[in-house]
Amino acid sequence: MTASMGQKHEFNALPYSYDALEPHIDAKTVEIHYDKHHRGYFNNFIKASQGTEMESMSLEEIFSKISVYEDAIRNNAGGWFNHDLYWKMMIPGGSKQPSEKLLSAINETFGSVEKLMNELNNAAMKRLGSGWAWLIVTPSGKLQVTSTPNQDNPLMDITKERGTPILGIDVWEHAYYLKYQNLRKSYLDAFWKLINWDEVSKLYENTMKK
Ligand code: MN
Image (tube, protein in one colour):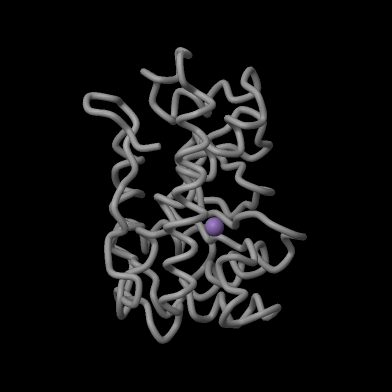
């Protein structure tokens, strides 16, 4: 099922080709991850939200009261949004470093970019089973590393540590199993070679303006 004309919710194109992240993330993994998993979450959300108020709501609005909806909404709206963010976190070749504003916030909170990366790796490694590691901006404008299970995210009202995600790492096995099997750490090392600091910086600065 695809979004019809004029409908609010639409499935975004992948911002690069399936093989663009080689050799760090292989083309087959990107293809299955985007075209099967990500698209599946979108299609299932559209199905579950048909004929409801959610058809005209933004995902942010839906997440802010996710506790009132059924699990199919929580899992599929979460899966759709989280992956939209995830694809933007990477860019072929990676981008060098955070913007001046983000860099100074990172240094203030974590000490250095390397220390932030270590914290995110720890959150990703400690996540038992499937889920996500996040860098969020808290409601008071502070950076924080956190993690959620399954397809939950820090915008959801059921999440303990809430905030606006500006960096998200998918640690479901479907994100790395074909190439790295059980070696989640090798996948994290690959992810950092592709990190799109320009996008993370843009999300940080937009969030701080709100
Ligand atoms: Mn995934």
